[in-house]
Length: 177
Image (cartoon, rainbow, N blue to C red; front, top):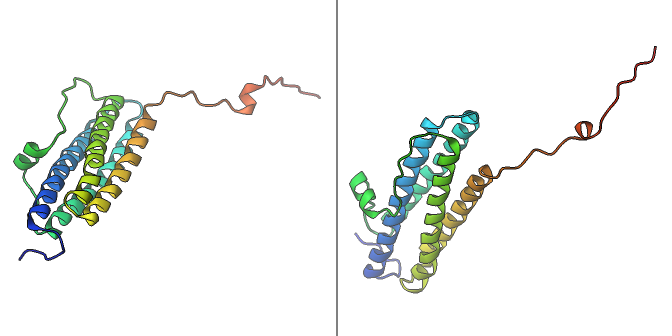
């Protein structure tokens, strides 16, 4: 039974298709993050391992929400790797080395790609397809991806740790007996 929610069948179908592409991107991205989580190497292994775990946990929740939104609109969510690979805009990159910066850079590019896709669709879904609820839902996802991208970007900043007061000032030992 199709929902009667004030949006035409053609419009819910168009929105469900856009959400299906987004779902595919999220699924491919979570797979890439899990790859980074499992295979990262280097001096910062533990920190990055935990960081990637946090990110894929967030994406798992996004994936479920997107699939449920598609079902709310009365359509079936794609659920096979074949479907995801045919719908995604994300690509795989082959690398010889499993260093954390390489993973972070690639994941940042993917988040930014998803942000662009969301930004392009937010207004369109509301104005062209008259689905303000999904537009608002997409805005929340975009904001979450922007924050995740910020966290990734912050891992790429090479800054020297500020020197503490005691290390900035030469101190002389004086011992009085």
